[in-house]
Length: 122
Image (cartoon, rainbow, N blue to C red; front, side):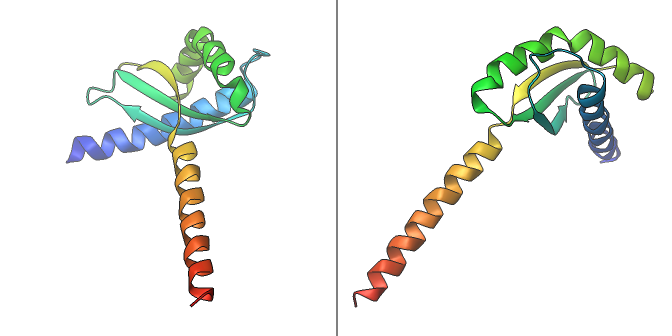
């Protein structure tokens, strides 16, 4: 269990630092407005999936490509800030959980509205 706690704390540290690096150090004009929502580390801490949410959905693919092209720079900056034996390889992914949650919220609201309308007629 000890290893799990370490990976969770390291993932949170990496999430905060990468968010700061992207916001303040990456100068790629193709990186749109985004939020780093999560980091999933492999058990050996050598690979990190960085999940992002992009404000404008039509810019998501362009933003991911720009982040992949800046990955070496981001990893280098991260290495200066976070002291680990091995700096994980970073891979950027769109966080679809937010969009999925939003869709589910819409479905639930629709069901609730229909139920409310059905009770008014009885």
